[in-house]
Image 1 (cartoon, helix red, strand yellow):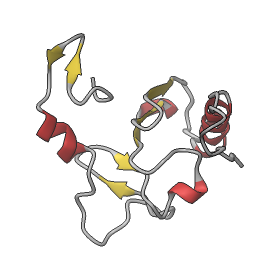
Image 2: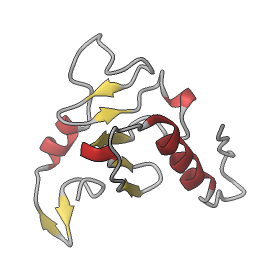
Image 3: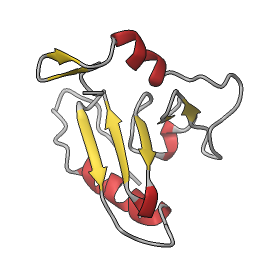
Image 4: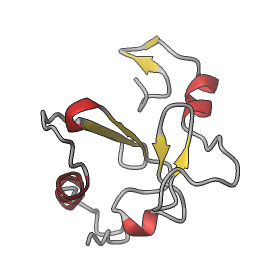
Length: 119
């Protein structure tokens, strides 16, 4: 539903303005984390500054939950990624980065498109 701007199976669940506000930076000059991500109404958002550190493009939004669950929505790739883990204590960093890199490496890039490089 979030990838489709608030609609699910052709039915509007959230208004387009709600989704826009949820996925736009809402905290002014502050950064959400050390990487420089932005923060919307309920999501971390990959910023122009932080996209150099990740295969995710600017505008990708994400969040995590209890016991190291995580997801992200990449509108540029039309992709939703969900990673369910049951780990306590939660160690998000390395495993999430590994999965994110593997997912983006699996995307076929058309010859006419610029190549995506993943660290």
